[in-house]
Image (cartoon, rainbow over all chains, first blue to last red; front, side, top):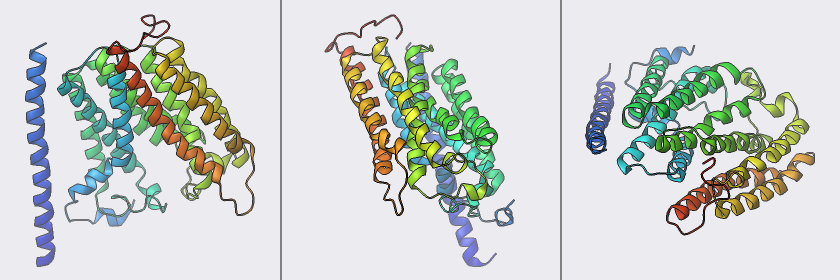
Length: 41
Length: 315
């Protein structure tokens, strides 16, 4: 792997990690909200 | 199998996974699902309503990914689809399959846990219908594939409705039937004026297999079949005159525009004005009809308009 490819590799990996992390965080918040709403039923 | 796909070592861009969910198709899915949700009797907490729509969108995205996993070679052979992540070699084929299965599985579980297992089961059926029954089984085998494919697009408003009510009644089934009958004239009008290369990749599209004359007649036939189904929600008392009058006017317009398309023959260097007009109208038709349904139900819930003729019997 050339240095340029390695930089690109790292960049893609990082952006994917951020998206997956953000999605997980979103679902944590969503499930908290769902739980609160359904406990009130 | 495309060897270029297999040798990719670079991690796929996250945007390509997003592309794989067919975001443009999803906008229509989300719109019709929201309409089903808003038009249903009763109410749903906004958080749960949002979750139901999210689950439907995720199910649509997951089945779209499975569709492209299965059709990677077909997509590679067509101009319109050759730049998709799989045929373009930007993603490993197995990753698309795993992503599709994961998204589909999560969507059904989220729907089941947060909303209810009836809506979740309907969502699972919708995903299976699109990814397996349509994509894998019938699309490559019959020129009626568009009729069958229309069924996949017809699920979202029905699931949105059932997410609120928790039961399958006449109204959500009618919403399903409307989109089901609407899809063939909508798509075949496009197929008449858009030159596609489906024939090249062995997908039996109606204009190629049965010819243009037969396709035109079938457009007219489905338009005629669509009208009573569109008017039915009002006729059975599921809606008031607000939806009813819009449905009658839209049906008459659709029919009026389908007559020239259904009866004429293509001339040399034909501009296909009528076909393009019918296609554009068909999109407006669906948006206006569903908006009218929501307006009708919201107005009725506010007590601003009277109930439908037989309200309570069916809806």
